[in-house]
Image (cartoon, rainbow, N blue to C red):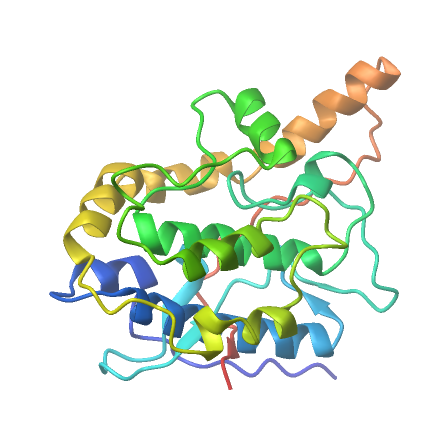
Length: 258
C-alpha cells in the first residue's frame, strides 16, 4: 500500500509575498534561503534530489507573517541511492551546467538552483538570461554571470561570496547544503538590513510578470535541448530517449523547512 500525506499550503508563492511587502532586506532573503537549505539538506540526507527548485515552487505554509517556507512540486524528484543521475530535466534558468553538458550529475544540482534563487531574491532578475535558449544554455554552462551596477551596489560582499560558492561551475567544488548553512551570510550576521524592496520588486515585476504563462511552455525546453544535442551527435533521435518535463503541481506535496 502507498499512502500520500498532503498538507494544504495556503500562504502563496514567495515572489507574491515579497511584492506585497513594504520592507524587504538582505536579512529577509537570508532567512528564506536558510529555510530552503534546511529543507533540501533533509532531502539530501534521505537520498532525495528535487531537481526542479525555483521560486514558484517555494510556498508559504499560511498567510501568517511568520509562516514557514514549504518546498512543493516533487514531480521531477528522484531517489538517488547511488548518488548519480543522468536524465536531463529541470527548468531553463535554474538547471545546473552539468545537466546541460549531458554529464552524470548529483545532488549538487539542487545547490546550483538555490544559488540562482538567491541571486534573484537580492536583485529581482535572474543571473542567466537570454531570449535565445542556445545562448542561455551557453551562459549557464560557462557559469557566466555578473553583479551589475546599480542593482548590486548596496548588496553585501558576504551575499556575493555565498552566491559565488553556490554558482560554482564545478559541482565538486560547489557548496553542499551543509557548507551553505555554515556560511556567515546564512548563519552569521553579515546580511545587510537596508530596505531593498523597491529596487527588487521593480525588477521582479519587469522580469517575471509573464513567467506564469511561460511555465508550461518552458517545461520541456531542457529536454528539447538535449534531444537536439543527441540528434546532432548521432544523426538521429532515439525513441527511447528519456523525456521528463516539469510537472506543475498544486497539490502541496511538500517538505517543510523543519
